[in-house]
Image (cartoon, rainbow, N blue to C red; front, side, top):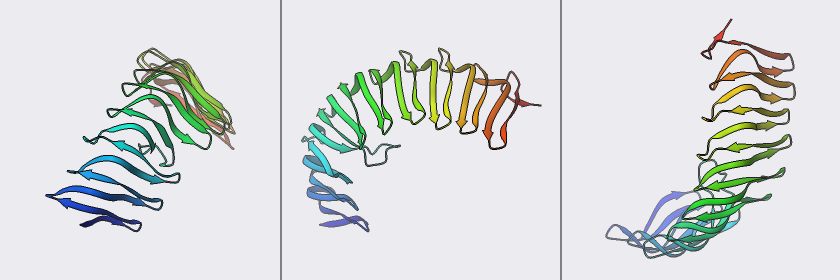
Length: 239
């Protein structure tokens, strides 16, 4: 029997046989508890509490090959997640399948359908105190009209091409001072007049050509006013 990977909250604890984990183990201990379940030849099998967080210890079932199957409750542990968002749905041979609720917070859940492990069809997403965004997925790629993250200033919204590139008119990066707003070309590059870096004192503004700033620009605004200068056709500051 071994204790390993110890922290102030506890240790991974269980038995090894021939260098492989077997039998009941507890692991990944934190302030909320420890994950626990059975190993066979270092493969997770059967019912597992897979991770513990503010909502308790969540998990589901692994088959004999260590593949997730059936109904699961789990935390988002991906980069960018806070570790408190939960998800719920079914796995079919290790792939998310059917209706899922994801990234659930106090304000709601991202919600939609998976097909062969990929998001498909209409999804509701990015819920916070100001509302929920949403749009359509095709083979796990955002397409068509989307409403993204909402703030007190409004919701980021615009259109994605069939390959998931931002195109056309967009509002984004909304703050209390307003939203950045302008147009993307078919390649997803900024073009034409844009306002951006908005705050309570105003917005920066100027022109993009092929994704590069050109000509006169107001770069940022503060209590002392808005400052800026000029860019040459190659996007380099001049003057």
